Length: 297
Image 1 (cartoon, rainbow, N blue to C red):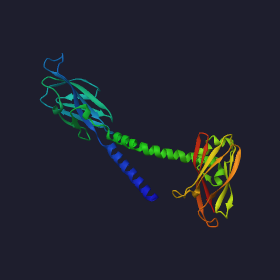
Image 2: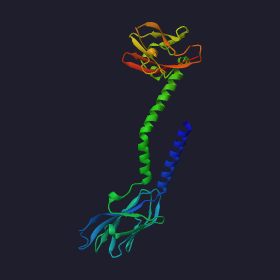
Image 3: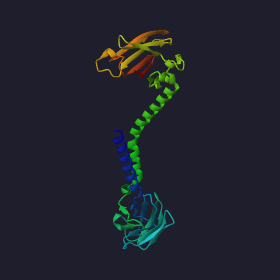
Image 4: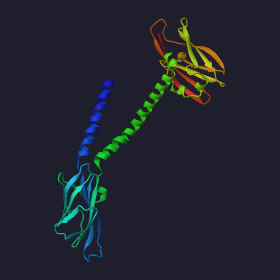
């Protein structure tokens, strides 16, 4: 199963990388004429039209030409960059870097420029697309794909990030409480940062395993309450079946006192066994849960 998971993850990474590489190399050269001014003081019958050329791709576009209707009488009045030129009925641009755009303001003496008057858009390496409105201009596909992947990855990332942080905290607690960990206790991160621990020394724990009771097939423990308030211990055998309460126990302990208790095991102690018990501590407003004790023989 672990091999299959790695295979699936590897395939997904390969697929995402391949799609992103393809989209990154895709050329996205677009043109649109979004604005028309029919009334202008510089011409009685003419109109002012804006033409914008976009390079939405990730490659530099060179030798760009936008062919306009040859029947139009045109004059270039202004542009957003010095590289734009008007040669009869064609706009030309030397170069547009990735993500750049260039606009030209044209005076049309005998009509207007709209979607139908923009005939052909080309560059040295591609043929572009002409759109009717600015809203039709398509975003950078590589960036869009990356944003989608990142958005989809947020929730798994948060999940596994949380899991990773919990594992780190658990490892840190097990390392700091090495003596307790070596005695069979684990998942100590909650206890390590709790108020309950403040009443015990670095390598002390409220519960100690004493011995095996062979006659009762049970494990004997001793619990110490070194605090000034009562606390409660709940033990649950992780192997316990539903409604089988033989391996479930609840033990209240008074302040500054100790008590002994036993936990039964399903098989005889003289057999090779390994059982896990889940301990929870209720201390004031604190609730420390899922601290694990493993008995192996």
